[in-house]
Length: 205
Image: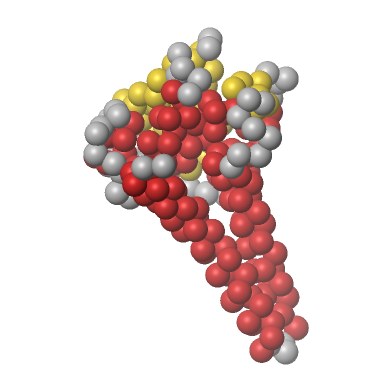
C-alpha cells in the first residue's frame, strides 16, 4: 500500500469519527446527567437524550458499514431496497431531504451501491443550508440530483472526482476519491456538474 493510500484510509477514518463524535458525546453527557441528577423530570430528559443519540449513532454506523465496510465481499450484489433503507435512515430528520427509487427486488453491483451512498453523502455535504436530493436510475446509469439555496462544491472534491494527480488532503476529498475507485472497479465513471444551487452526480458505464 502506497503512502497516498494510507493517507486515504486515515482521512476516511477521520470522516467516520467526525460523523459519530456528536452522537457518542451526547450519550456520554446523558449518562453523566443520570449519575448526578435526582429530579425525575431531568432523569426522563436524560433518558430521552441517550435514546435519541444512540439511535443517531446506530443509523450513522449502518450507513458507513454499507458505504465503507467489506462485509459479505464485493462480489455479492447490493439490494436496491436495502440501499434505499440505509440512505433514508441516515438522512432522516436532517437539513437535506432524500428521495430514492421505489423499493423493488432489483440489485446492483455492491461497489456501485457503495459509491452511490458516498455520492449522496458528498451531495448532502455540499448543501450547507439544506435542500433536497434524489437518487434516480437511468437504464444502467444512475444520477444524484441535489439542489438547495446554496451549493458549496470545493476544489478538492472536484479534483478528486476528476482524477486529479494530487492526493486528497481532507476527508471529503478522500471520500470522493474512494467513490471514484469503487465505481471504476465495476467499469463506471463518476462525473459531477455543479452550479450555484444545484449538483448532478452521474454514475455511467
